[in-house]
Image (tube, rainbow, N blue to C red; front, side, top):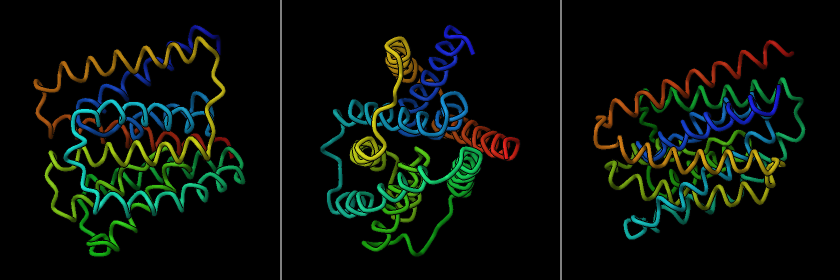
Amino acid sequence: MTAPILLFLLSGIVLLGASVQWLTGMGFALVAVPALILLLGPAEGVALANCAAGAISVVGLAGGWRRVRPAAMVPLCAAAACTVPVGTWLTRQLPSPTLFLTMGALVTLAVLLVMRGARVPVLGGRAGALTAGAVGGFMNSAAGVGGPPVSLYALNAGWTVREFVPNAQFYGVIVNAFSVTANGVPGLSAAEWAAAGGAMVAGGLIGRTVADRIPEHHARRLVLLLALTGGVTAVAKGLWTL
């Protein structure tokens, strides 16, 4: 793949992910990770997703940090800290086809659970926070997708969207910081970093511009459908390369 095509595809993926993140409060990793691992490979794709999702969460949290719930977030983040190294270790042991299969399957399963609005009794209370945080930390470092377990926890806790978004962004900052520490920074060229950074800014502007024009449930459905497509594509790539 030539450098201009790579930069074009990288910019498009990050632009789309950043747009939906600002539009719905979540979704960068769900939308971008399957495409990034196909474009850059599993290790670099996940590492870039961790960096980008963490940066977007930092910016998003700036206006909503007063609505963060420490009683829920402390156990979530503490549990994630324990499982992030496990996810990183696992991905370094598996061959590429198996990684594509694993990451695609994790994304697909997570999306299907969120689409169903699954209510899981084990995700209630303090034990639920620990469970969601542990699963989310593992998935974030292994596949770059740590949000769905937290979404399911919030659903079972009865949180509104207004309550969920700042807490999800807080969790995104912390768990992606852990994941970047464990996985490292992707080895991109200066041009690739510039393309990704510019696409993040442009995606943020687009997302904020259209946020008031698209009903939230339509935007959320679009994010999940895009993520489901990406997850299935990654699974197909893994099967093809076995």
